[in-house]
Image (cartoon, rainbow, N blue to C red; front, side, top):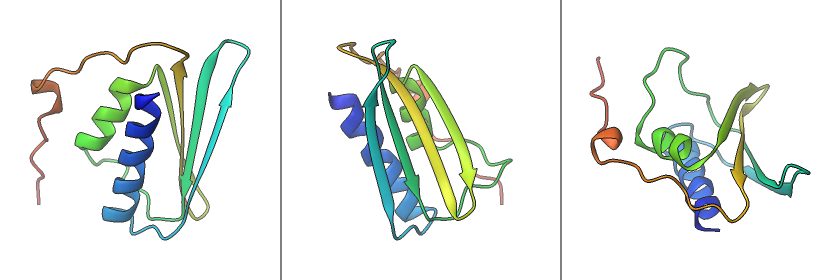
Length: 103
């Protein structure tokens, strides 16, 4: 499923680029509801609570049906649910425009 690859890739990119993570784990399972559950964890720094979501986060939110984002003791963990066999929703180009940062 392409969505799994895209989500894992974005999570890894964000973990390395923004969180300076060194380790990442990936867990994949299927629930009785026939949703694929992808759980990704890394040991990087979590983003600031008041930070606007970036392009990668918006992409992940648009590919998944549910996103649970949790800060763990040493990093961040994200679980996403995807329907089996479903085609990801299309994302408009304007929805993916980066939000300017305020320094």
